[in-house]
Length: 310
Image 1 (cartoon, rainbow, N blue to C red):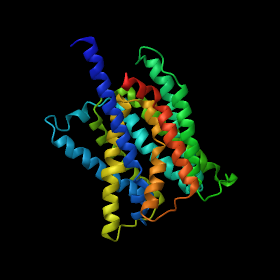
Image 2 (cartoon, rainbow, N blue to C red):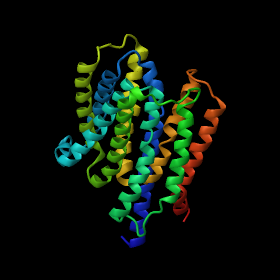
Image 3 (cartoon, rainbow, N blue to C red):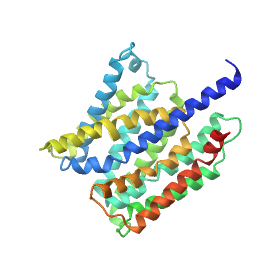
């Protein structure tokens, strides 16, 4: 195969992987709605149930492959550590933050992770020498900044933001969650040769860890109706299932910085979905936030879009 053909094939694979990341972001936007309809199942129990379904999703895929479950045995220990660190570590600190700080403020700090992905990826991708010239940080950072501003408006919609001194432990946990998810996402690039089906094992480990946390921190509350069970199943298949497999593939082979900035679509679309199902109001502040997030995503994608046109 000639050099131009190889480059063309690489670009197509890159765009496909970036599209997978966008699909993951769309799936994450349904997280709030499905979680709302799964109440009153407590958070760690909900994570355990969802990730059991997510691991079953991966197991079904592996069963249909000629190699079966053998690829899981070939996953390097460092990749296992990173995967469990990312999936279980993020959810542990996120829910710890929600238990010890107001939800709005904790969510706001947690949503530093898209900006952190852009920052980390700008340094990391350049150091790996993946492109012929150093990637410019200007447009992704500008886009991430606009997205963060829009997310502040989304999360503080009809709410006064005030950081309480008594909740600093929760704020620290939210920051830890943001650091864990952003570092896991970017460092996944190191293991680009590890198939995304390995996420099956990470999901199962996360389910077990969440179950242990549930036993220590919560009382068991089982779903009482078909709506709750359907919501939990949807969580495990979508935002807590397929989304993580798609995100893994995207971080290993796609445009990391663009996806980092585009991740701000998740809270925006989540809010719009809640409005659509009658659980929220479309205030002018939310409309402005939508404009900022869309504009930020376009700025972050500037080089990617120009390269595609070329």
